[in-house]
Figure 1 (cartoon, rainbow, N blue to C red):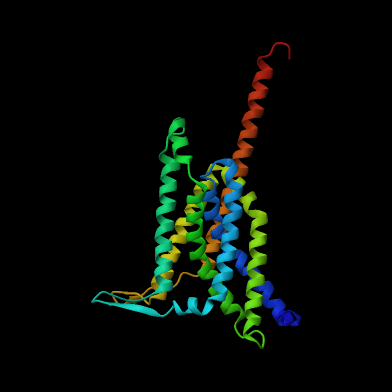
Figure 2 (cartoon, rainbow, N blue to C red):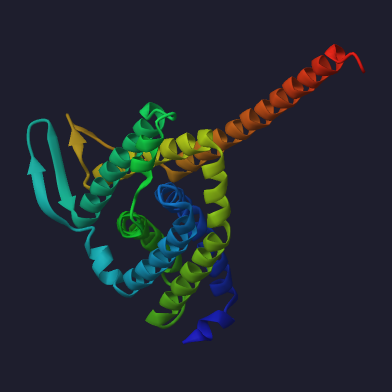
Length: 280
């Protein structure tokens, strides 16, 4: 079964696929982080760990059912009208529902963080009481949606590798397990960092809104949806990752600038205090 690992081409494919699985898992980590931060502090690490374990288990199960997953691309219902037409498939429907769920979840979270009065401790406590099971259920749903994109990428990357059908499956399973383990190592550090910086929380939620729109556009593209004769194109994921990277870079610069401003203010206050002290 593991004879494929003696091939140099297989190792190149494995390394490339592992890297892509990690990149495709970034948006998954962001959602798991947001969901886990709603829990009491003692359950946050547990939710993050189990969220990633569920992601790994789901992806491995989907790999063994990959023929069924690819079959979801076939339209089962067609919509035809004078201004709109589309062929609805299972994959497009899942992406559409996932995108709508992300839009709802993200906007409601942003509303809570912006509109909820911080001085009202009782309101804060009421909002933060979220069960671990409820959080894991939400994570399970999003894991499944993100797993489809991940698995289809894996299938495309390993197509034609090896002489036996199970060769590609071995590479895909190894890549998924390695990528999830790497994400587990860094997930809690990301969660703590986002939880520590409120501006990063809002930025992460904004990323989820962006990802939600991308999933909806991808669903329309897979359905070959046409509005008034114009077909909706796919949004290249490179654009999305560039936008996220650029936004994070700007936010890191803002954090560094704010830290510098606070240092200067503290320094000026200490100097003023020393000047007013007659013993100095």
